[in-house]
Image (cartoon, rainbow, N blue to C red):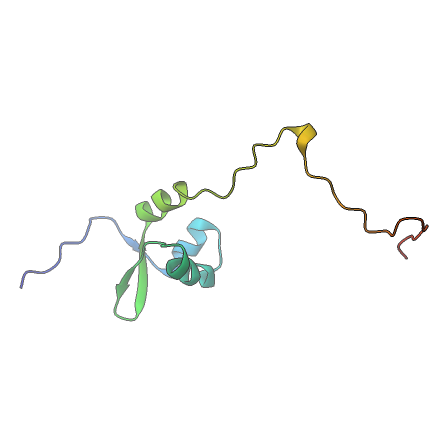
Length: 88
């Protein structure tokens, strides 16, 4: 059996990858399971390709609002109607 040829780039630890994405390390574990964040298991450790993380992050779409300023959602009034309730 021939050894696996790894890419020339350095693999990042969970701590390094978390710093790159500006998230907590625990988020990386969750994202790997739920969002398909690319990782390589090396023994009991996870390692991340810097280039792979950047490509993954660029392909994520947080949300689409497409709202014009005058179409912004209304904020509900928390005070009951007909009362002059004021916060303490």
